[in-house]
Length: 355
Figure (cartoon, rainbow, N blue to C red):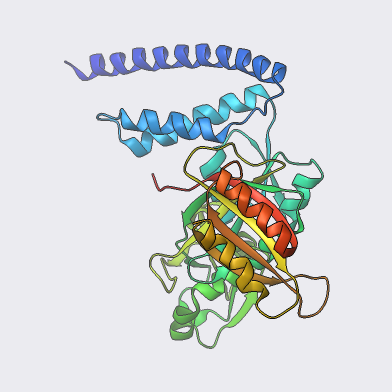
């Protein structure tokens, strides 16, 4: 078949795709009306996950990862037709939080930038955003303390989680490493590149910023400055990448969570996050941890944070396998209520499984 004929065939298929998208949009309008009648939220991340997995499983010549990307954008655009959905993230645009939010929601929703991770939680609590996306822990540097503290304060719940690869780049307008006098970035990013910076930029001043994207904007205004951040920020702000993948661990990743005013329904492959404070006294923490073992509940993560109530008083944040609706988790929470000075449910949600 001649090239012109092949192109005409592609044009015809594109018209068919466009026609089907119009039909999908019309049905989405009916779906929106049905959801309002049932008082359901416009966005259902659990159903979106199931649909994407089903479509990927049917992949042929078209790559599975491209199927996911295409249909995520279709779903994002259809979601915008149902009701304006605002998603808050730590800005400015180009941060890893922005990239994680786009991974979860696509391009068509309305994004709201905040200047701190705490600001994302505040946007949800005040109703200025429907959902928020925040980093909760990094595989190299550990917990993101501001986000953890804001989660413990309450008023929001974890609705979903995603583990996002974090490949750090050094971006600068300077001609080379020897011309760099300052390196801007978020404290977490600087920590993730500590060894590399000590080896190649030991004499440069390290300047902490509110986010990696803010660091790139600072480097744009500083001819002898550089920024550590993601490639997305380089493309948005036009600051060239001088070195790629400078993080100390090649498998560097950050766990982001979606927060909302309610958590997710039970799927059968879930996690639950809780906070608790033990009463003062010898052996109190052991008595609490024994409950997990007695009920055969796998405690996957635990850390302590200052309670902010008084000096040397701590709150424990824990992740465990199971959903709040599971009988074992219900019994756990009841037992903790008897043994702890404070217990708080922070969300049940499907466990993240890489695609």
